[in-house]
Length: 600
Image 1: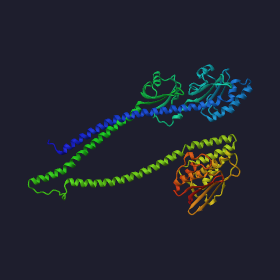
Image 2: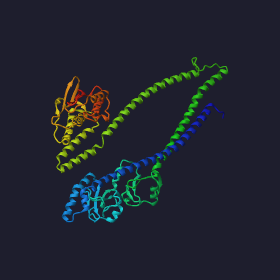
Image 3: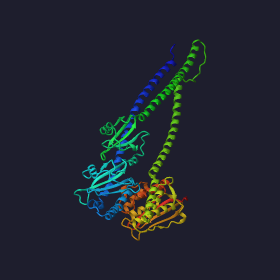
């Protein structure tokens, strides 16, 4: 077969496409596979490191609980000279329960039991009334065994077994030797028990897939924590334990459980535990298989399309040449057949002209595309800012609401009207503060927010302090920016009355209309602001700068809260609105807040 230009072009293009596609597919698959494996391993290392840090911090919280107990005077008295009579013993231990142990259970509800024993075998046991883990407490570990396991220097020791018979091996005991009132010798041992499955709350947000899990293994190979509760207390394979001890934060493959799994572990310097993350290698390799199949399918389809396009490309080039060739042959034979005229332009001129037209078209297209993409980026940026603000403000509000309600219940039970009033005010302020769906609100809502704040301040300063509110009632439904008045009034208490709150001190709120604007004023008769500081604050208001942290010290109004209120007003209503101030040192300060005159 005679070679033609179309076949040659097709052969060359097809060869280039096949070689390029095969090379890119082969190397990209191997590189991406390697990178994916490295990323998986690095990700697991970071997870293990963070989990170890969180676990150590979690255990240190209970070390502080130990500190609050062994430094208590009543605990030391029990160790030095425990009461001998039954009534005296009951009265003393009950006093210890009410004054020391019950507050500890309220502060740390995860603590299951508290056990105190002296070296004369006098012991006392307290269980969390909300949990009651043991029906009939009976020490299972002898004093000698507990003394042997506890650190000789009085440091906190982590024991994986429970002190009491009848409790499961899902407990972790934190024990230490403690002194009496004289620090010359140890007088007894203090032990606190917590549930081992409490550690699962530390890693609840980490997704290891359906078959991955965390576990904690101590130096002897005993499993301290495992998502399968049946595994807790059992021992791991000796070969696996050897790898855990000899591979600090490095991955290795383990098949001791009958399934090949990738394991990454790190030993805690604080507890001595090995924190281990285990994932099946099949789950890890699954994305690689998907990449391989995707590469084959995409490569095959791309190759087929490229071959078709190369064939069409050769035909589009050779067809005009064939037409011209036939016309030239007719001319050679003397047949003066007209061929399409180019109007004095040759093919190169037309290509150049077409190219210029294409450049103009592409330029217009790129300009349109750029404007479209820029508009899209701006919209995405605004959306991200809104999301960030929402994430910063919505710090699990329902959890805090429930916590406030629980505190109120405790206050009602304890018949403490002050705590009930304070917590109710805090809950109302928090609920108002985390409303991220609106920025504008009515003045009456701001006044309610201020009243809740004043309720809290009443208990902080020890007496009533009434605001002088002169705002006309017809202004109560006018628009303002949420969280405007309360930060300014808080600044007054912190800075204007910095020398102490006196009977003659006052805070006055007023409002009036100026043209199309609504003006509110917050006035106090506190210490005022020094002229040089007043100039700095006014300059920041004029230039829309947020206050620096070093400007908030000293007497007079602080800068940070005021500047942020000023800037938020401008972001909502425009640059012409916001705060301005007047102050005279020793006489007081007036803050003027300007809004557009709008009704809600």
